[in-house]
Length: 309
Image (cartoon, rainbow, N blue to C red; front, side):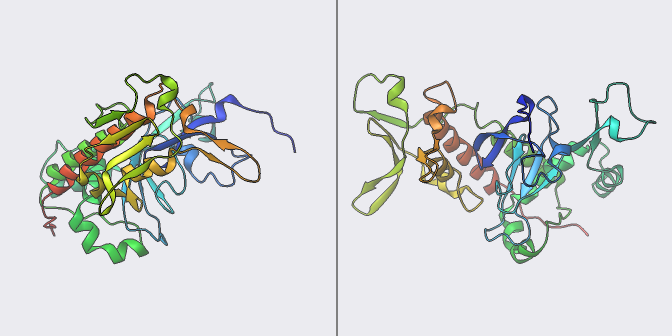
């Protein structure tokens, strides 16, 4: 069977935590597309999805929000809970369809009944569906929640309790989402750059494989040897307290942003080609340090759940 290449099928996806890749997303060539076309039907329609470990995941529970198509193992055996879903009007029947069959109808995935329940539970009519969405994201980051319900989270999807204070968790979830979504544009954390040469050109920022530094005790995680000409140091150790999908966010960057070549096909994966900015990967390391520190700060500030009846 022959298929014609479609530019519309080339999209940005999130392959692993904080590691985007271009992908060809098309039902004719992708093995399984699940319900993703209802979450991210095209490049012009925005959405947010909270991704969590699915049943059978071998990694400790974690949650991470995304605004692009996630890979199945973005979070291992991932399940996605989107803020919205989209349906083509042409698939809704003649009663609802318009003359433009490519128009989409946006559906709020938090039903009115849930909104009413939260407003009644907390006696607060100002609570919105978006507030509830971020509340869930905040609760899913609670160390107490993940520890107390660790066994259940390996066997079933999360259940969200009514905590004593709705707004603390909702505002924390909104802040976490800000850092986790905008990780490519936030201000980089100030790390010390040691350069073997006074001036570096664009080629000098290319990365082959980042590794940790060494000291008398072995590995030194306050240092990353970026390449033969550049070393980053003074990385705060609390950076590595932010664990997502089985390892620290910074170690995901080190693992995924390296040059590889497939032995059989000879096809290369060169992370330096991802951006026209030669400092993209270097600044990404610094940005993920900031994301990690801010995440740890927010998570550590969360109060006990103190569930309501």
